[in-house]
Length: 193
Image (cartoon, rainbow, N blue to C red):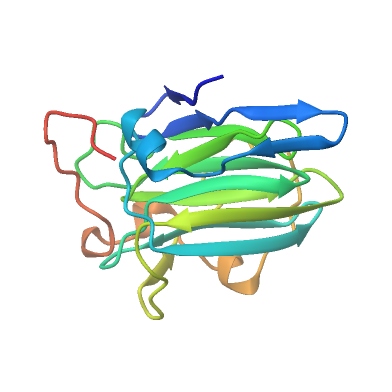
């Protein structure tokens, strides 16, 4: 079994399927292996790991950092989530577009959300533990958000009334965020991660 990486509907956002070896005892998998991921096309310098525990219908997002942007490799170690990436790079041909995937402890899939994207997820199971590797450290004062229910983005969340933090309830719609508070699209001619 080999590591599989597929592009989603927005260039740079990747669905990762690490090989999972199962038998009567359970399973074993590598959740990250620098050289194998690099050879498969995901060459991101991860510097921080985060662990989030949430109950059903909790929605976290849509979050991003501006001066210390974070690429994120996200996976659910327990439960099931619907994970979303929104392109918020000013000038991008896919600005305001979103893509997402179901991540669960059963399917072992991961999603890579590149720098310049807002990220969020909602918990579908009774509870979920989510781990995500980041390409930059969390920087207080550099955290921003986009309103989870922004109608112009139109995310098809599988939950009608999520549980939100006060901060996430107060996030602005993308059209109301000034350009200087958004990342800038840089067309390098290649799909860099």
